[in-house]
Image 1 (cartoon, helix red, strand yellow):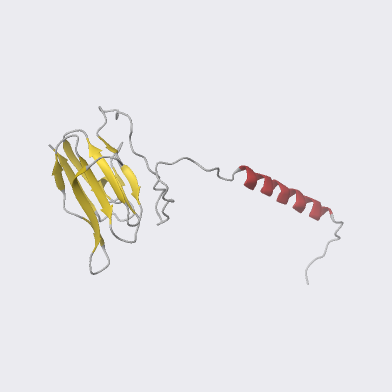
Image 2 (spheres, rainbow, N blue to C red; image 1 turned 90 degrees about the vertical axis):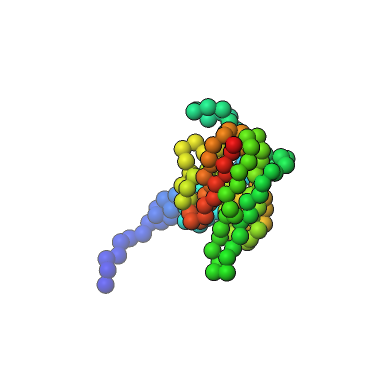
Length: 165
């Protein structure tokens, strides 16, 4: 059959040492509770992490453009809905004045994101890139005049826009 070699037991010592090293590495790399802007766990939908990355300081190109503002009173609302075929959609684009807020309501059982960008891709330095849990809401205040395209990273066909006048 195959070759056999004498076994003096030293292989077990090497194996045990390797297991101890592996356990030490696992213990050292255990995640400690991290503070987060959201208590929603990361979504795993075959895309990179969807951790919040809301800009809270001025962007390199100028002052703060928009930010998640949980306590703000919304001037407009964009609902996330599901059609009869099971596809998710953002509501119609809205127009607001600078300094007003928009509530994004997720009325379905899937997690989404509110991301400044198009077709699931964030723009460079997005002012909002926030996870939106199932049956939850996120309020965003827009400070600068302009057009803000909004997309959902896990569902790239979801598109809407906020026009700030």
